Amino acid sequence: TKKNIDLSIDFCGVKFKNPFLLSSSPVSNSAEMVAEAYEAGWSGVVFKTLNSDRIPIIHPSPRMGPYHYEGKKLVALQNVEQISDRPLKDNLMDFLYLKKNYPDHPLISSIMGFSNDEWEYLAKVSEDNGADMLELNFSCPHMAVEGTGHHVGQAFDLIEKFTETVKNAVSIPVLAKMTPNITDMTEPALYAKRGGADGIAAINTVSGISGVGLDDLVPKPNIFGIGAISGTSGPAIKPIGLRFIADMAQCEELSLPLSGIGGIETWIDCLEYILMGAATIQVTTGIIHYGYRIVEDMIEGLSDFMREKGIDKVENLVGKALGNLKTTDNFQLERQGMAQYDLDRCVGCGQCYIVCKDAAGQALDWDAENRLPKLIEEKCLSCMICSFVCPVDDLITFKEMPKDWQRKETQVMDLSLANKLKHQPIPKIEEL
Picture 1: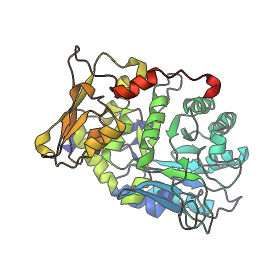
Picture 2 (picture 1 turned 45 degrees about the horizontal axis):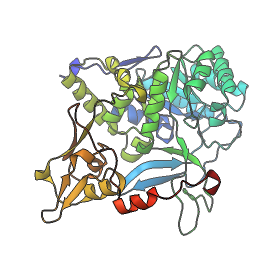
Picture 3 (picture 1 turned 180 degrees about the vertical axis):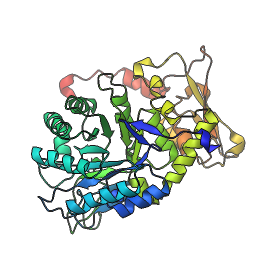
């Protein structure tokens, strides 16, 4: 029964009923929205980043642009959303309402100061009005106010300074939210730790351009004739998010709890982040695509997986796959394999033949009469791109070959051409 499965997680000393949280974004903009999410099954929220009221926040219009690809809707989403445009007082009143009516659902206040004093002020008023935890937004990639967002996340001394300021001002746990618009996230995360951070949240949106209008030549989203590089989210960025979470989870010097964000829509996405070291999961674009209801799939799918594997506590899955994540020099190169084909299920589309001929080992012949591929085993590179383009699931699979098996490593060049090239002098560097 489901009662045997414990999805609760202790994160930075705060208890969550399950690992699934709303991230700081349009989906967590008001108490009314958050309450609806709680009712759907989300255990907590990172409220949309507070505005101190000192600088007016006006959102561009339109605020977002989609990236669709080959019939798949919302593979990625580009947004130019700023922090909350609501008065600070209204947001703090929402904190009080949520904590009164949903005391068992942790509320994380996302804050972004425009000065050291503002970081301190926003931290204090958040705690005073019921926030259980803080998330320091060092990562928004398109804030219009200079010196905020990922500009701070790329200035490591400021990360340490502002984190320390906030930690000295409050008694609740503090997360530092990292920007992915950087090469190595462990370095700024270590600066956050030196400032006293209790945990790390990552990633925020990746700076990008979702497309260009071919009629008007304006990058999207088109804001009355102007485009801009801004934050990109959605399934397309999940590989980047998993990489950064894994990097930080493997950093022994860091050793802080992690909250994973980036491209999460299904329970499998959630589980992958957990296995890479994230203790909690934050979601925005998946909700924008499908609504708060996706948490039902996350809860049911993760519970069923745990039941099938005989795992009773989700905390036992955190970082479980990290032992199998190593650098490429650890690969066992003496073990080789090739593709294998279940031709009884082949539909004869020929896509495998095309991609193998044009982008791989040219290891397929084509039986035109029967419309079937024929594998030349010794030429197969085991790249497996044929399986990626095959429309029939699991028709093409990988199999390991015996140790004495040898693949044909080089293609045989036309002999007449080879003979001609053999007699040509090697060009000098200055001739190249």
